[in-house]
Length: 288
Length: 335
Image (cartoon, rainbow over all chains, first blue to last red; front, side, top):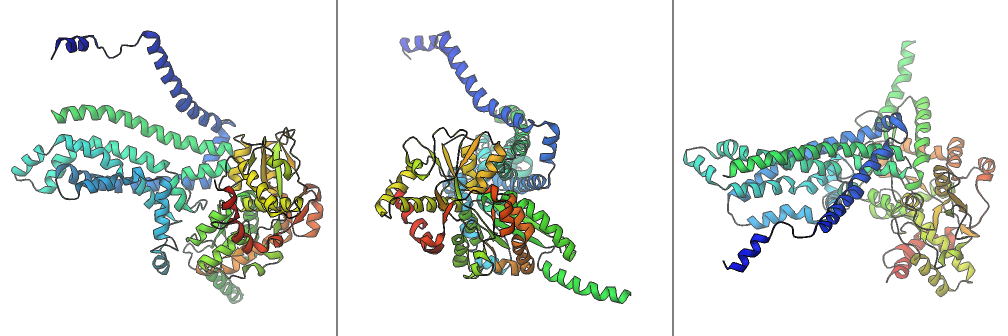
């Protein structure tokens, strides 16, 4: 390494800007956060409580709102475990093995990230709708998919497809296959290896993926809106219910429900921060 | 005595069972798929109908609602949203259901009185308080300093009435010069910065988000917005001429039969024509058909010179000429 480069490196601290520039940049960042994140959140809660606690409580304790909450929780309760099972299987296959079609599988997993949620919904209308491919058959057997709960769950599973797998693939790749190889050499079966070696190594990653997946499952609007049919008390999830209330000039109700959804998101966010912190320890411990 | 009671109970039970049909809960459920601005009307009407139905038959009926842009709602029914009744913004949306899904007869519109439209409405302007841009008639909408809010005619029924009302005015004022009419319509849509999918979305854009100088709206929607947001905020401007809007209703035969709700659905729609239904429609700012009730609410509805859809050769032709893919609306909004 030549002397000039060494001198440059020695002088190079993380920042070389003058102090006023640093302050201005930090202030810009903080202002942005306040105006685009904190303020809207404060407005949601402000509007929700603008007519007091009683109006807030009665907006949430209302049959259609409760039905929407139940459907949202049910959707998440089905979509998240499905995605955990799938995500674990896919990331295990992708990270621990080399096979033909591996990169195709990765691309397919990423597909829901790159497709607009509206398209994700329309796909199901085109396949399961009355005029769609399977529509006549489904109708003949009296099976309802779209404009009913199964469609909402399907659309949600689709848009949350990549969350767990995307979380686990880099983690598993980083961990390599040495521990699994050791287990196999010591005579463990495939299942045993998975349960005793692979899964414990990634458990925090799985939880982290579950939280991300859950947040999206509860908050999804676009895809669900297309397949829902918007039947009150039956196929409205919380985000759809919020839109309906807002459009009916029931602003307290809309924002009260929005604050409920925001609270669910905040809990998820807090858990996520906690896990991020735990995950770092875990990776450090496992890695080396 | 006991026998007698039983003999009365049995037919009642049979009726109840046949009405319940495939609905496993036993109690019938009716799905009314409607367009945007009827939310408040049906909210009230459903409760009243359910109460009366219970008194008459002893049956507890649940009426479920779905609202959205009229065209979008029709599309959903075509795609399999199992509506027992549809109460949409215009006839061609129900025609579309009949044509594409065969779920109801093509002649559905003659099955109920008044072209199956139990109430009517028209298109008026909603402007900001004090009418700062002094918008008085259709001619003001194409001024370069005026922003017009209207939903998208492709998805919204109200928007199609807006469009045809404007078209009718342009035709009258230009003596039928088609080129001038097109120029007027082109400029009108150039002045429209956003096209929401439904009437309610447009009202929210105008009233809540403060975009635009004038909202082209259903009369009922404009009166409701005026009430919801306070009289001081907006004013209604009645143009010199407008269109007689007839939002029709129909039983969707196929789904009602499947759910065993045909009689119930029919009774539900007939209730709209009954005095209570008409009164409720008037209270929610729809012009009632019943002349007696209309007279009582006359102060609410200003006299306007109205032309109707026959001027455009009926909805089927209006839809084909103006709103179908590649139609006049596509031509004037291209570029």
